[in-house]
Image 1 (cartoon, rainbow, N blue to C red):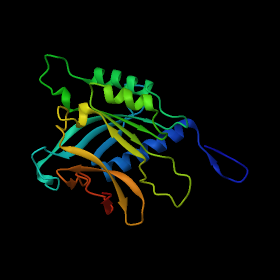
Image 2: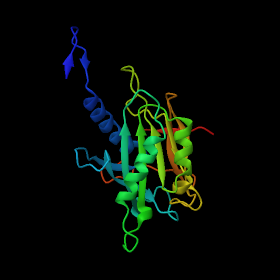
Image 3: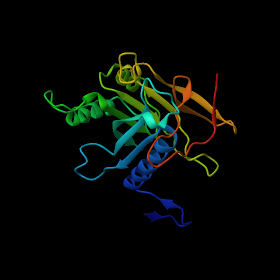
Length: 215
């Protein structure tokens, strides 16, 4: 880490990336019921975060934590200033295919979910590419923090494709993303199932704040 004359820290690209991955993990655990760990290193296989997404079964109540299921999540985090292009979706698709079991394997390949987390907004072509992908895709925009008063858990947009949330997708149309607002007026996306908000079901326990749904 380098410092300017007034002691303001200047982070390297690697340091910025590491901090964004750490912040993303916390947001995903607190707000989207995921428990992930950083992979990193030269042998990461193109994956920054890996872990589980803890969710209710399609026929279970959203607050019945005893009947939760887990889905394998493979995530890439992009802390860049320019908008995130469709090449990152194609890259993650390739990574997903490498992690999928062989056709004669007894493992369930449908349990894999691709997660692309970006500090910058997604381009229209990126959203279209993800929407047309045959693989379950979840795109999450986590804006950078510009001031001390901004919330560390701020989420910009959350978009998933039909292969994940559609009637014929992994969620069988049972889950949705709704825009919520806090009592202080801050907005963010939230997970809902069967008309109920999905709380944090991770083994580490819930860290939810009180958010209300905008009708």
